[in-house]
Amino acid sequence: MLGQKNLKQFFNPTALLVAGLLVGCTSAAVETTENPAELYQNGEFLRAAEIWERQAKAGNPSAQFNLSTVYQSGRGVDRDLVISRKWLKEAASNNYAPALHNFALIEIEKNQFKNALNLLKKAAEQEFTASLYTLGKFYQEGIIGETKPELAVYYVRKAAKSGLDKAQYNLGKMYRDGFGVEQDNEQSFFWFLKAAEQGSRKAQVKVAHRYAKGLGVKKDNVQALAWIYLTEKADVKSLSLLKTKVLKTLTDAEIDLAKTVSMSLEKRKSN
Amino acid sequence: MYRTQLIVFLGFLLWPFSLQAETNAEIMQARELIQSLVEKAPAILSPSKKSLENREYILQKELGRHIDFPLMASVVMGSYWKTMTSDQKSEYFDLFSDFFLKAYTPLLGGYPGDTLDLRFSRKSGRRDVFVRTQLKRQSRKTVVSDWRMRKIGDKFRIIDLNISGVSVVISHRESFHKHLEKKGVDGLLKLLRIRAERLPAQS
Image (tube, rainbow over all chains, first blue to last red):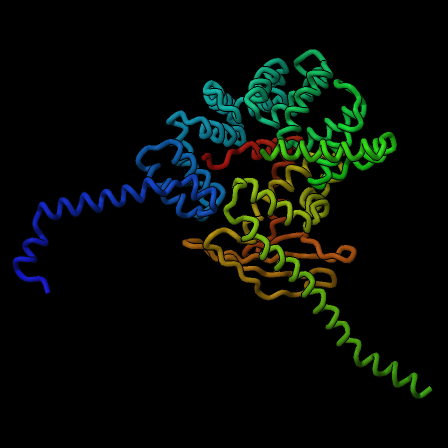
């Protein structure tokens, strides 16, 4: 039982302040140990969204953006495009590149091309790879006005150099077709190979064909077969004809070598 | 003579039962397919060294193997399908299947806190079976999904999905056709390409 004296001590302002600070410290500790990005990666979408919501309200642009994505896709929360747009706009007004990017895409869907272009350019100025690529693709396909091959190559190349596999694959095609650049099979192969090494299935198919043909690279059927084996593991079946053709040219030892090369390519990709 | 007539007569009497047995076997086959996917989902999605995107991709591929995308894609496009070039079809096919798998694979559950129950299954018409699942998630509305499946060859394949009674194929057909009427096939492909560039949450 708490006596009168004990009660007074219990409600002592200093004690309350200390207790409050302790509680505050504890909740701050909880806050810092719970990483919303980690929770999200673990599939704990609701808990991630709750933390992002607190951070978003405190003005954190990356939390505002992430919150907009969970409301857009309905992860951890019921899908709500109005709330999603609200947080997306907020993050974009804070010049957060991923938000500028997604906001631009919404503007394009509404045919607001000028605004979309400005938003993408703002994100690209921050060297944001996804926007560099999208901007390049849009100039390539004329989604925003006319096709502008040189500008398309400029932005796609920047994204490719940043390591984006789909940009590398696309740049390979630009060199192959001479789109915005001088046609160059070696450069084309170089970028297909870069994308293939990162796991791009389409690029792996191209690399296998290129080795078999010797186009842009020295003809090498062992390498061609190694890339064919790699794509087969991902259920790609479009190379079965090429495989039959290549197998006919190789000895058993060379086929074994191709299997070893394929395994090493796979290991390299997963490391 | 009498014996043959008796066999024919008994066969006639038992015919509805054998049909019923066949129907039940088909329902079970379709249900087992969905059940196997539902059972695989938590194992594939549970936290590991692989990124969430990678884990989800593996589950999407697993589900995708059982979906008849050519049928679904052509039904969604309707009369436009015949007018499309092979390049357009191939790109549309990639974009549509990618979008479909990203949007609807989560209905198999498998994330922490998800409860996925298999409900009743029923035959629809001569060829199709509906398998119902119910997904419960914390602080969320319950989602009831009917997986429409059709036996093609000797295997069941998913040909549509009804969410809370609404067909995904029909609702996409309606929304795509509005766009197709205004902007044509190229316009729709552009729209799907734009949507595919959207970024998810950033770590």
